[in-house]
Length: 237
Length: 355
Image (cartoon, rainbow over all chains, first blue to last red; front, side, top):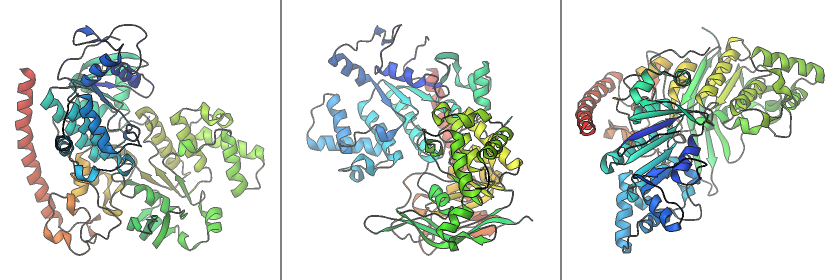
């Protein structure tokens, strides 16, 4: 597949389970190696050979994964996660400055840092964990964010809060967000352009409005028809 | 008017923590389900949906304990029966329950038919193995599932297929009520549709009489169920028909919940999603007044005193301090406010993107 993403754009990659969405996300993250083809970042082929270049790459490209429960190291207290962010950026700060920075990030995602301090991940709810992951993104200011089903394990109300925050981040940092999701409605709501994936291939791409309101490919049509809607009847046959 | 098949009144169940604290996850729930009707239960995570489903079965395992209240299934109060009676007469025959991760409950070393033989050994011991096979095959055929499934191991089936198989197995004794707890949450949209179709088939062919469907996905409930109840912090805050609940919610919590629906339809993009600040209350402590008051944008001082009783107006049940007219007036005002806000930011965004 071929595609290019631009600065400040929100892209959604939509497909059903097993269509290769997450694999694509992992390749973009550099967690898996591509078999063939090239990936360029900022116009140059990306370098992931040495530890140092990988660290550079991950400063710019960050991800939020589907399952907030497995995104945390259960043996570490939650503030360790945020302290690590500061370390990754190579900043040298005093305890008070670190504290202030963490507090700022937490208040951005409507969490109270005092409530989280000295806690272990299992003491938090799923929504809180996922928001903490976003606080982490806020501290790192990456250029590209890969969000792999960030809201599929939280309920509808936390979902709108999380989406609001991600959109706010985009507006502030001009970040590129790549949403990986099976939820067509979500993709339509957040993104500028949508890519539909089926069995490892992109079958349709275009602006969000065009794809959802006027789908061309057979697979896209079926995908949209299978989602229960509230203003139109849902054909079960 | 048809008869009531399930009547729950004043049901309270709690979890006991290690420190001997009681957490009332279901706190005074009343509802009635009529024969042939489907009821949806919605609410955010941790509001007690799943605990309610578990409690309806009548089996209580620590740390879940029974508090008070009655569950009447077709005229008999199942809380008055012994555990043995409950297992022999009620579970599977009167009420069947599909838990959240049901499809992972299939023992990987057993063929599907063995699960059905197991059920029949307990409930209909007179049937021979051959008869059980015929019965199961016929049932699977009528539900558009291939009888070949019976001869497969669970790992040979896809997620959606496993879920449908579990539903078919749990309804093989024709229970009066089927309680389905998030049966489609782990599935993609195509398999979700197949599961919903199966549930509708079961109802149409009268294998089950009534259905309680628990999910947090509201557009799905709108298509599946007749009535919807919304739970918040262990209480039912509102009940109405599916259409009323989606398009004309009364309780401020329901209003927000409906505002957070995302569907791939025209007009969705310009729509501002509702978000509820804060988190649900801690149920370990006794809550005075309205449970939603802390997060409600309309809450007044009077909301935080006394117990808020639910009221019934024109067949709608809702638990709020204010009357319908006041609430509607507020909603209209809020919407106007939001519209103007949103239009301004929207123009701004378009300008930025064009530049």
